[in-house]
Length: 151
Image (cartoon, rainbow, N blue to C red; front, side, top):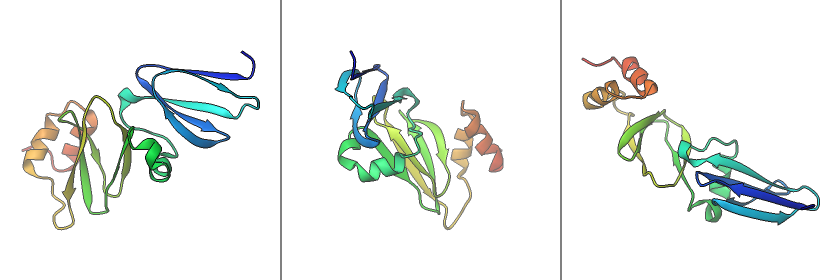
């Protein structure tokens, strides 16, 4: 239909709805129709199976629109003396560097962040090095090698 904007959000997606370039809502899977006489409505889709939200406005959106995003997004900010171990359903999937900020979609898989204080000792615990050495993720294996490898 003319002047109607339609969005069909897939089961594995969520979308950010913008009206006149202002954040309006998070759209769940489903079909949506909006009157859009002047072309001011848009939706940005995200595959939530990728878990991490990579968007230029992610930090702004989770802090400025807490009510609209709190059911969908989880934000993690590390201090300059912390390293973060990101687990998905109990499996180590990412290492966050000091001072980093990440936003993850809430969903069927549980995302958990374990913080390691490196202010006194920047050494990686031996049990963690063993875990990193067995990791399937190449990024995690490289992290183990950079920290002295497995002995």
